[in-house]
Length: 403
Ligand code: CTP
Image (cartoon, rainbow, N blue to C red; front, side, top):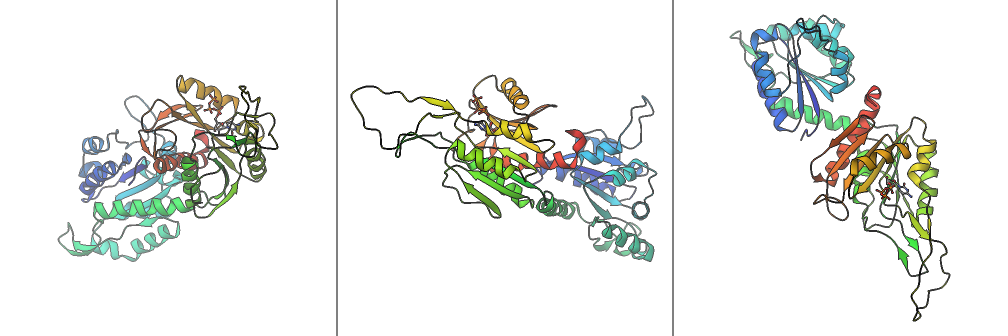
């Protein structure tokens, strides 16, 4: 449920720190990547070794490594995270967060993180009920922080009341819910053009040249973008697929029609995802009437179509442009040259040689290629591939420095 999500787990000095170990394991099992930042006091309650083993990443406590001077950047931790979860959060840390105190790495990271923060308070019932703590929690809520409910129950002090840390399972659900509602809004105000499906190049009124593209991948991307609040113009070849909710659909037939519709829509767009399988060649002339057969062989003269992705790449400026490539061999190298030639921000490479990938099937296996390198994803459903692509698009806007 959290596949590929980056969760930064902040642990502060509370007896409930042992529950952070359980939360860390649950996050990993849900498919998330986890990094843990601890305060110095948290180390008294749970060892960095435990958290490092469970998160599969080194633990970050200090601003720099005193042994070699290596700097731990709170900025890059904040940029990396899709969600920052501070569990357990002591009254002390909550007070500092509410007032902007930044005297440890966990707090500087909070101040610089652009993602959603979730806080799971953990303290004695009287500390929790104190007007100061409650005021600080209200301040954090007003700042957009999500506060996990503290259930009533037995406390380390021997008292019974509110202040226990929420159970790791509840925090996990809250993280999933928070990231899901974020998903709805993350691309609000942005307009994307998505091209999808195959074009149809007429030979005469009854015959045409086309390809096997069904449009599934492009439709899944349009759906994912719309779910995140983006305005989507789906320029589509003929398909049997239903239009995803909230998407504006423009039906086209030929590569020339698609070129016109896509360039027109791109004039007011923030980006485009070029998923269509556009014919590279079209008949030089479309016969006005059905061509009659004769005893002779025949040849059809084909001429090049315009490359829509390259045309958008030439005018895109700092707008986002994503392309696809379908290769049978030398995939990465040829996709890299396509990336440059068409001025794309990233390219999604499908390999024809991978089982379960390509036309017609519901699964796909892709590699993302951008100027920083390549990242191969496992075989996934086309809707999961679409989610991964849209996640990369979200990151493009959230972390512009990583482009
Ligand atoms: N594309 C386009 N307009 C075209 C041709 C391609 O917008 N006339 C886009 C596709 O939607 C896709 C990318 O360009 O995003 C694919 O590039 P292309 O050069 O056609 O590569 P392939 O079809 O993968 O392979 P080849 O280079 O062998 O033709």
